[in-house]
Length: 249
Image (cartoon, rainbow, N blue to C red):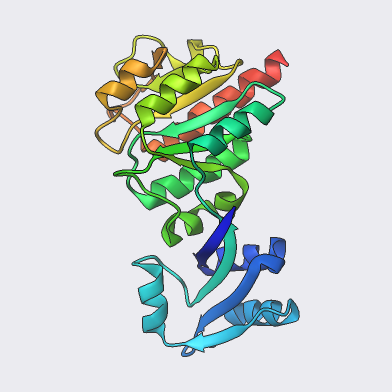
């Protein structure tokens, strides 16, 4: 399943043209900008048979919705958000214990993009978010993800609490990240079928989400800061899971 999607920024556009040129169908560039880096991308697009259109900077600003486009954006055929039924199909088809990342109302698209990037690097099977009051695959999120928005299955679910219960019935162990938890992340078994559940910026896990978790785990903070950015926390949790799975496997 795919939909039209905007990627922006020199690095993201270059990556799209290098690794998925057959899915790029238009490159938009700032007509006022003329430099070597932008010209290289234009040449790359033309050699791939991609249409190039020079536009006013104001049009790029409007499409970027406040993001930093650096004078370049591309329309691509990107991965669309999937639903609950497709999540069930993905889990049914897995031949290994799932590693899932669940984000409870993370609203900053920069954080979502960074979480997708970490999920891609860790080999997570899916990222799951609620449909309401949460960031989706916006141009900003896709830019920060640097290609991970296309590689990591991304699910938007109507009722997160119901989805968590469904995962639990499948034998997925739900581990919530909470600063006040008594057990440290490093004393938590992450080798089986697990879902790592993180809460929103500043607010943390909602009550129903917290209650649905089988266990809470904390990052051992040694300094004066009480918590880390959600995307940083997600990266730490995911790669601790990777470390444990390598040792056990």
